[in-house]
Length: 103
Image (spheres, rainbow, N blue to C red):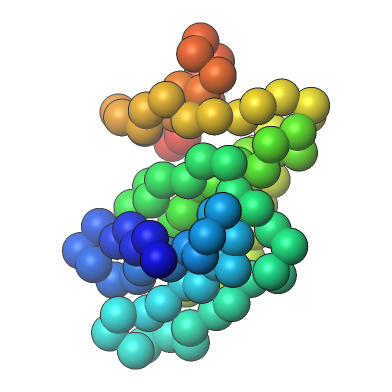
């Protein structure tokens, strides 16, 4: 099992083998723990802050998940790898030279 924590350790994302069987856990129990569809396989993922998780699915897109509300927003869609390189200064770099800026 692989766990990564949001800023301030408010939430944890727990992935099973092959980056499947995703669970988002509220570490302070203020929000419900959530299990995602078992068929979703993440390619890359990073916590943006204490509640927003940015993740990608190969050949589908990049998405932002709000761990407090369980709402997902689409950032970009397409037939690409969507492999994250880094997230710094509100900019996500992926697939070597592509960037998305967040406000």
